[in-house]
Amino acid sequence: FRSWSCQAYTISPPNEPLQQVSYMRLDASVECGSDDHESITDVAVGFIVLWPVGSLVLFTSLLAACYKPLQAKTPNALTRATAFLHQEYELTYFWWEALELARKL
Image (tube, one colour):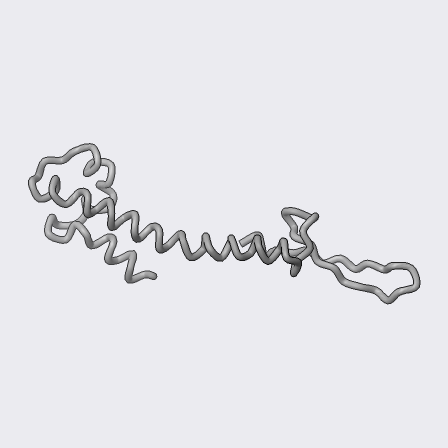
C-alpha cells in the first residue's frame, strides 16, 4: 500500500507561480502520477489481487493432496505440515478451511 503514499512539495521556480509536486515517500526519485509511478501501482494492484486468490489455490491444492492420506488415516509429512488447515475439523469436512477462505473473498 505504500506505493500510493506520496509526499507533496511546493516549489517556486523563479518568475513563475507556485507549483505543487508529489513524490513517493519510499523513493523520492519517482514522481506520483508519472509513468514510473503508474507501473509501480499496477504491480501493487496485481499483488493485492494475487494474494487472496493465490492463498485459496494453495490451500485447496494442499488439502487435495492430503485427501488420500487423511481418508486412509495414514499421516505423512504433508498432512502433518498442513494440520493447521484440517486438524480442527472432522475427517469428512477436512476441506472446510478452503471453503471458509473462499467465502471471505
